[in-house]
Image (tube, rainbow, N blue to C red; front, top):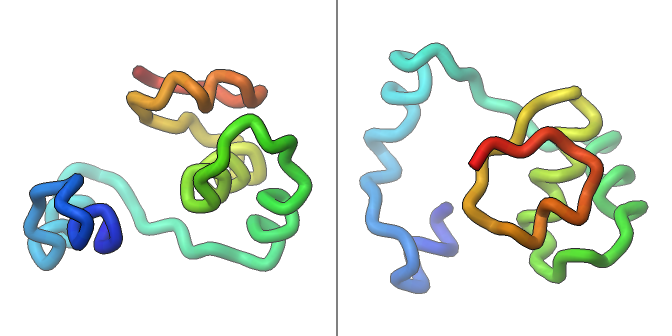
Length: 81
């Protein structure tokens, strides 16, 4: 998110995000070694390594991925639009 913010593609107060995440019942998901292995094994349907990591985390943890990126539908994961 900080990279997107630095590129001018995201307008958000990142310091305000952690309490909002907790307040809304979400939790942080650290990137693990298993996630890295899963990301490296993905077919290259999507070129962005950060988005591929999100896909790998969703697959590894049996989570839904909230996205507006239609390219991620090429992966076998549950997407929420």
